[in-house]
Image 1 (tube, rainbow, N blue to C red):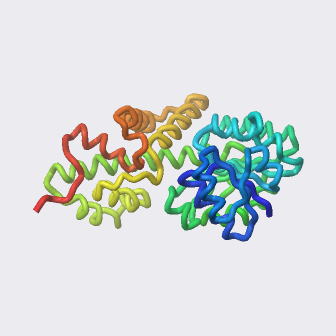
Image 2: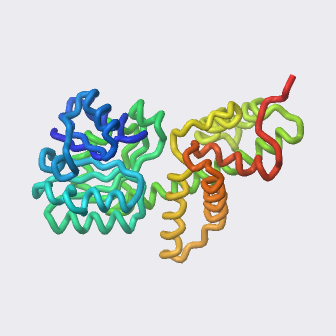
Image 3: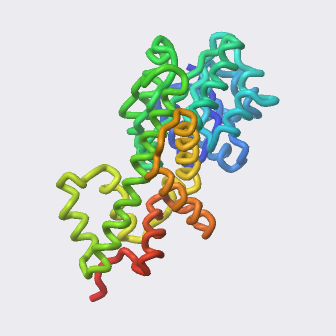
Amino acid sequence: MKIGFIGLGIMGKPMARNVLKGGHQVVAYDVVPAALDAAVADGAARGESCRDVAGRSEVVITMLPDGPDVEQAILGANGVLEGAARGAVVIDMSSISPLVSQKVGAACASKGVEFLDAPVSGGEPKAVDATLAIMVGGKPEIFERMTPLLRLMGASVTLTGPVGAGNVTKLANQIMVACNIAAMGEALVLATKCGLDPEVVFHAVKGGLAGSTVLNAKAPTAIDRNFKPGFRIRLHEKDLRNALLAAESAKVSLPLTSTVQQMLIALMNSGSGDLDHSAIVTFVEEMAHTKIQRPIP
């Protein structure tokens, strides 16, 4: 198929590359010239705008930072809906508010364009090796048509409900990940403060009930002090903010989510917003005046 890909950042770049590897023609676009140049070097055609990409594609994938970016790219001037033909499919793989997904989906429907919200989980490593978990909202028949394309980027592709359901599922995922990292930080800071080697503690517990994919991925980065971003703190804060807004609308209390979101805001205010979300542990470290680290010989 002819696929448009808009948004070529940490996640979008390897995702677009995997679509190319799948044998599809890709027309790419990003507001950052260097990101677009890299996609063209990978074999994509150069798009001049969101409208231009849509006019040259059967399916348009967007992978953007937040809801306002998605609205601008799809609904705005020179956007996707100005170039998309009736019957085209737009797949927004950004992590945004479910309410924005529903707004964009309704606008697409009014133009005869199909829409799926399909946010992902797994971070840069799983985007690179095409093993993302993809959570989809939309019509079952459109989901079935697009599943082979989505499987070029993810190992798990699940329809969770109508438009907006994909992002509700992603928000649930982000709550679990953030609270898990925060709890891990508290646990390993305690272990370090008590004179234990946090790496030994990690290996001792990972095979038990406390073990998780989050623990296996993020404990080593915290111990090694490697906070190079795979998923940035400021983006995780955005996700928790969207979760809290959705919870307010649904009259659901999320006390743990609220607490961790405040931790993320504090880290952003201290200049850590572009670190990996594993750096949530540094908030706990600051309060305890103790860094998670191996014992000094």
